[in-house]
Image 1: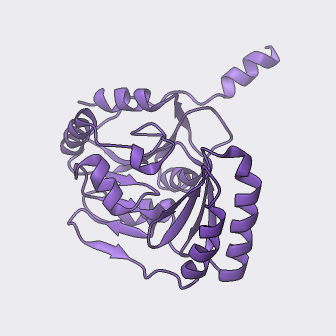
Image 2: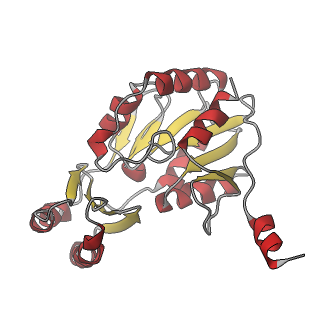
Length: 250
């Protein structure tokens, strides 16, 4: 067998057809349900996505949750309230299937971080997103600023005790607390998710915690996008493939 063929054989296969009768489905948002945009506010509702998620939630008997780095308000804005169970800010805010919202108080170091990052984001192309429990510095429009952004965020994290979380062209300083994996475990301990097969679909480094949690509970992760070292067992190439996979369960 050639070295090239060996590499191909190691590539994760597409996920099996979704079985609504036994699956608990956890979905990231940006890069998974909607394409990545240069600015968070540029992602807008899609009637087709809203219909697809409402239909999937019915078919899954409510065992569908969105787990995203966005705020809960932003998740609801983009998905038009189609999904009730949701974890926001990477798990620091969680709304269960009954609509009850669990959250943490903001870390006091965020005030210092906000003042420090305001000076950094004076640079053209760098955007500071305030999620109340976290501050995200987006530098997709200014990739040359990556080194300065990461250095500033690492220094702030070391000074304040905030958690530094890195994603695709974004550095985030967040209140210490739950991550996406913790959110999967919390949902799986509750109805209607308990006893089902957990499947986590996401594209970013922050989704690795969700992949690992799903696998530990007997399910699997689905990586969206280019192949990389990942805890996910399966892969889909892009957002369109995710939506097609979801539609196949209808």
